Structures are given as C-alpha cells and as structure tokens.
Image (tube, rainbow, N blue to C red; front, side, top):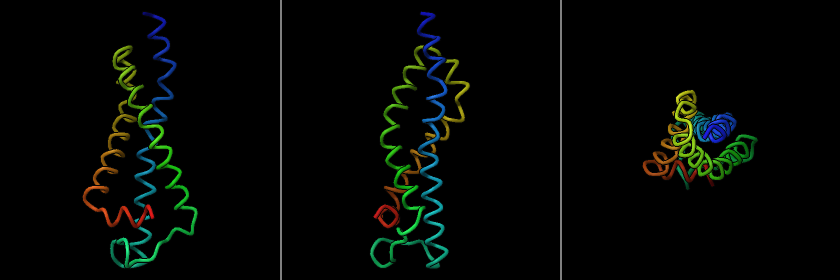
Length: 123
C-alpha cells in the first residue's frame, strides 16, 4: 500500500498541471470573444461577423482546446485514482481541481447557451 501512496504522490504534479489546461482554454476563449466584441461593438455571432482567425490567438486557443480534449480524460482518471489511493493529495490540489471544473463548466455553458458565439470562435 505504501508504494501505491508514493506513486500517487509522484503523480500529483501531473494532476496539478493537467487541471489548469481547461481553464487556460477558457481564458483564451474569453480573450478571443473580447477582441471580437471590442472590434464589432457586440458579441460576435457565427455568420454575419467575419472571423478573426488570422492571428496567434486562434492557434493558441485551438491548441489549448486540443490539449483539453486529450488531457481531460487523463485528468479524470488521475482524480479517481488519487481519490482512492491518497485523498490528501487532492486536498492539496484543490485549486487545480476547481480551475479544471470551472474550465469544463465554461466550455459546456458556452457550448449550450451561446452556440453562435462558440461556432464563431471555433470556426
């Protein structure tokens, strides 16, 4: 059992880093939306508003989304493992857990309640 706990403690930094990825995507998404709202004077929508995909911000957001799609399942499995093996580790990673859940909630919220905005950014 002690080897399982020590293994869990070695995985804690990976869990901490992977938890920040969805929140970083949410920040990049917000910057892209803010840039479009500042340029157009309203929240951008898919269709009538031109895309702002010619800059580094689009590629940063796209790569963060791709990393999020790849890391969220790994993060979830790590969370379940750490919860069973060493719950104390998750207590020290509460900021990472909270930011990951905030990023995932932001993704789901924007996807469901602002689909035109989501499509404008992701197009």
